[in-house]
Image (tube, rainbow, N blue to C red; front, side):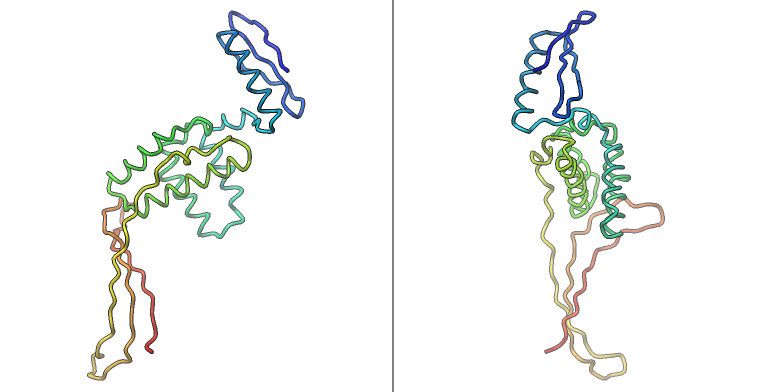
Length: 210
């Protein structure tokens, strides 16, 4: 069990973590310091205690660790994570402590992206990247829970599917018939770097004739 000492009108709760390192937290009231020590003791006994210094990492600092651990993933996946973080997530949340990310603020950010005209599929990708990043923080025992457990994911509308068949060739001969499936995403204006124009996304799947 820890102990409380008074310093300059405040109360410092001192305790030792499971590794024997001495840590402390300062409170303005002795009552709060005592309650904190009791909660810490219960967490340690139940194996649920986390080093509070991990939760104090900024999201920017944690993103560097996260990307370093993600180097074993496919290059395209790592590139997607890096782009989503640098362009969409960190500008809004980079200064936040990972242990103090409010779920309602995350939901507001997702709605702001949709209102700004981002394609719902892109907003959902940003949601998945952010959620994955914080889930790794839970696994690495930086934070106790993922705030995305309390975040409603953005809605992605179903794709319209159109079936096309190849027609006659230009020289009058009939080409071999083939069926092409085209999935058309909802077209929404998406902000992109200068010089790039977002077009309707097409996914083509060639199905050979019977």
